[in-house]
Length: 417
Length: 91
Image 1: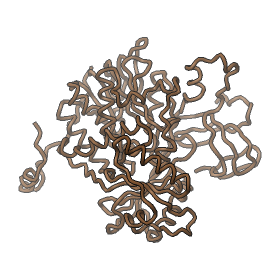
Image 2: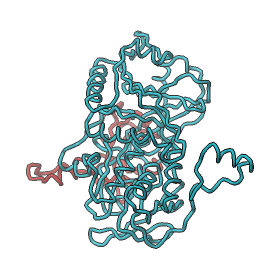
Image 3: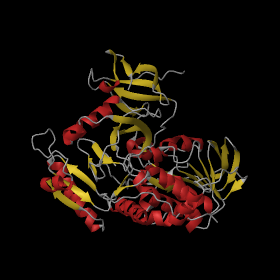
Image 4: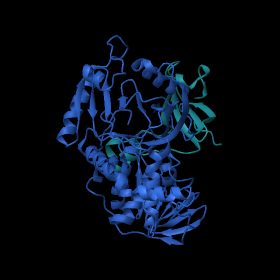
């Protein structure tokens, strides 16, 4: 049994100069066979393993990760969490996640630094105003907190925004979800890894999947850089590389992988205590607990796995940021990076069985998967354990591209997630 | 960000171009006879290759002509550029 983190354990370990903390997760050699294998050790994959072990009593499982856990898009996102989506199916999915976020630190005994500082979405033209008002109403009908703010209220909530009506895209209003906010992305991966490991899940890092072995329409196992692993159930949570893994099984997915960029500034004193997103001008910003401004840019329009985005994408975002926040004009940017996001034609995720028995995909989160991490893990674990989707992810099946029953969140969820 | 050698205008910055996605996806010859699965395949399913991919590009802020490109998506290196209607290079 692992030691619980608490003020007492902190005090006790302080007496030995913090040299005797336990290992947070093991470094196991893969077994010959598992009941299920999760491909991808990011937040979603680790959460899936955690809930499989905790709620579905499947402890003989493994997570295989080609790099290190949380080293992919889990560590590259801008950590925004919200659930104010337009359509009922999305509202159900993302609010399920938000409700788990609210108790996650306690459940995992790991501080994920979940901070409900609110997320404000700005409107810059008449169509934005109409869309955001419509979304506010839709949210409230779905039991999600949402308020519409006029320009003065936007200014009052976040005083550093330039609400002058003379700028190129003036602020005409906005919406606010107060329960929304941010969390520490690494901690989410580490917390779930620690929880899953404690229940007996093998977390195998530096282990890349090379091929998927199947006999007929049933999976038999995976060939990895650490040898063959036999299993009847494979849950793929490979984000930008989902299509690559799908191709190994002879499947095609409705995904395109594109670079998405973000950047952080040098750390400064607290200046913005909420998250402000603007879809029309494509700029969003929040401030980390360390003091850095966290800025999300957009995706390039071409397919690429290069983890390098185009310079003009960042430039466009910073132009918009400077017009909305003139106070940031002399900030220096510290780091900029790109992650590869897998985008679905309807901008909604896929949490689904496939035509191959025992092969499940959790992908297509595009530019906004971080916020859904706990809910995605919970629902994907349900889907794998029962070979049937939960009612909350039933709409996010792969077959919707055949039936035409898409969950079109392009305009509704907006460009930026 | 990279340079693209437009077959009509010569070498220009990538931001003048619009990516048009996977190339050589043929419009169904008899759309009325297509099953839902075949429609899904045509409309939505993509190879999304990591490696050399054939794709369409449009010189949107230039000559506005479409052309094809073979590009390695793992490092954005352009392998070949060829005109619409031409067959993809074999290597």
